[in-house]
Image (spheres, rainbow, N blue to C red):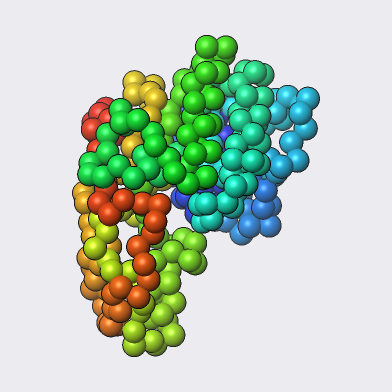
Length: 285
């Protein structure tokens, strides 16, 4: 088993990814900028936790040695979400994360798994294959795509494996309170009779966060499939159907006020991920 560094360990996906790595027998170095939240995690006593704030990283430090020379890195950290349009993604996050990752590579890291986003595909519709060109239109996706390009450039300078994991949509306990199902849970708990939402006809690709974390770990463990990898279900689901299915599963009722909110202007109406590369990885299990 490997010694794996996980950044963003106290985030929504990070919490589940650390737990999955432990379950699969890896030695985990967990890191985030929130040590108080880390101490509350179920896995805290089973990992080496090292707090680190990317905004305060010293430019001349050997960050690879600071983290105990890990065998590989799963880089989940990213600041400022769910604000997808903020200029800070390009002006602050991109240079900060690029510098952090290059520092690790320059000092000896040879294996890297980084989280990207389906928003890198921009307004392209239908089933999205990894070979499609990136056409991001929001700052968050542009910054992520720019980071991917920078890492690919660094492969000519440093010898390392790179897997760029494009996440689609997910749900589960601990999700951002502004997310759709979190808002639905809040309305149900308050005993509200009506739930305001969009028209619900937009088609997306959803996975439970536990499965997302499991897929991220499988992707990081293998070396056969490199480059961009969609982390997705390959199943198109309308948002209204997702909500109605969730209500059936929790055995609750609430009237859906469809069309109350406009559709997002930074996403196409119908898109989902092609999971062909992911299937190769899972079949090798």
